[in-house]
Image (cartoon, rainbow, N blue to C red; front, side, top):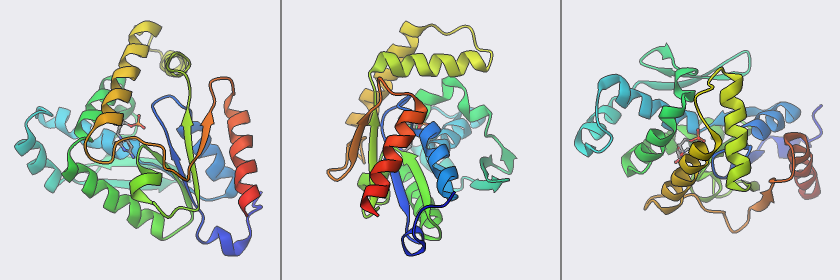
Length: 231
Ligand code: DC
């Protein structure tokens, strides 16, 4: 169902920012499907950079080596049957980059300005050609500061950890426990919110959605209602 006016849909960029486990990707995916527009998961691109370091055995602390690797990184995003796939060196790494071990490494590699510049350029390139929903940490503040629709999703860290635990369990990972996951999420929030370049911040014109007590359907309905209000 496409309820957006055609003139608006041409420049329909929706920015969804927020910390890990705030439901951004679930909601962004459903939102994009409901408007029949593209969904770009920008976190996947940082995850692919982290995966490249693992693959090449380069320490994230070694900025010279990280910089050299990033200069020639072969990283592309492709859509297959409407679903985003992330390719690294020609290989589809969409599943590997979701491993929990990659999360913190992606956060650390994302602190380098040369990594951010490269990926932000790719993200803007994708967004300028078509209406889309982008989710990440700096979409409303840095990637698309002029996006007409901006949302900042958040939730209590225990609720977010529980969501991540459920996802991991569904994938068969039974090793992880809630307390460890909550600690990891809080550490990652701290790093993402306090880095020097484009830290995770709520854009002044973003609508804040605390969905600690909302499920994905309710969050989606709330966001859709806010978008409709502005159209
Ligand atoms: O959304 P995610 O958990 O897949 O993101 C992994 C890390 O990538 C996140 O902790 C910080 C970084 N990231 C970023 O700095 N900017 C973005 N737009 C998206 C992700």
